[in-house]
Length: 164
View 1 (tube, rainbow, N blue to C red):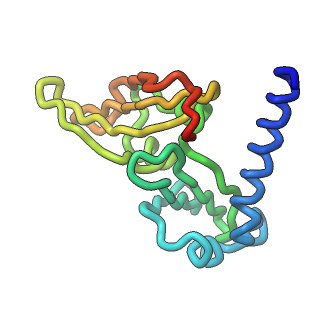
View 2: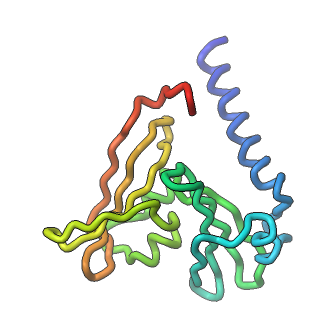
């Protein structure tokens, strides 16, 4: 099978996995309510109020997990969308000057934190898979004002781990 065939199969598997994750829980954007989300996924690790009556519920994939499901609740109390907050797109919006509350709304809670007193910053650590399949340690440096000072990403494998 050529590379395009393998890529096509991988893409199809990814799409099916995404559908199954939502479908298995019976959650449908526009129809399911916040109560339905909580019934299907349990209590969130974090619930955040957003603008104009929206809410974000965070469901991390375990300590050091590579996904955090973010249930986005519309002002009418219905599920607007269910998405992985740790995608490249979501992380690209975590830029210097963004507040720590907005970081939590975008990508969810970190799996660990580490103080850097000499820099007067705290690192919020996440483990993610990037677009190319590499496992990445991703840190968001929060300064003493509660703003993102910088982000740091370091690949920890070559993206070809057979145990994925």
